[in-house]
Image 1 (cartoon, rainbow, N blue to C red):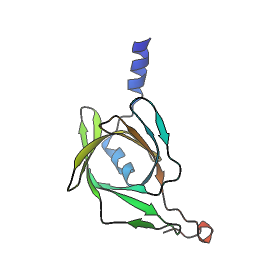
Image 2: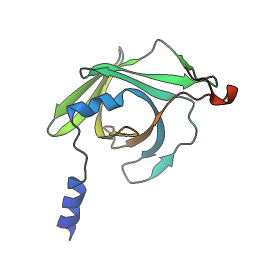
Image 3: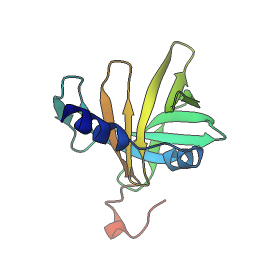
Image 4: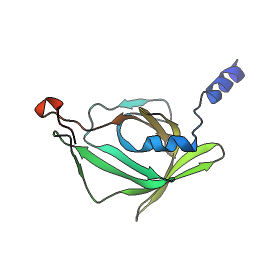
Length: 141
């Protein structure tokens, strides 16, 4: 029984293809973190989103702050990102002037993103966009 359940679990894992990487581009809002022992921390409204811009498996990730008028505040800070395929898995390798680290890309779709860090914490995101609370949402940049 355990063997059958293990097989089902492994076979349900999404195979990330090179064409899926384009889905990373855009704004992502964290929804929850699942810790290595199964505990979860849910996030409500977030002050910052993660913005990815990836081309040919290289790009950046930066934190942005959505504003009420549909624009984003940003700084000059960013992380270089490289996409790496190894041993049937997909990794996002980050690099700044101060550190290097990797996250495994567990799943990606047009609406959801899941990554796992080296501490076995899974970060779940939903696709986000501009928030416009002015002018009844008629104008978004």
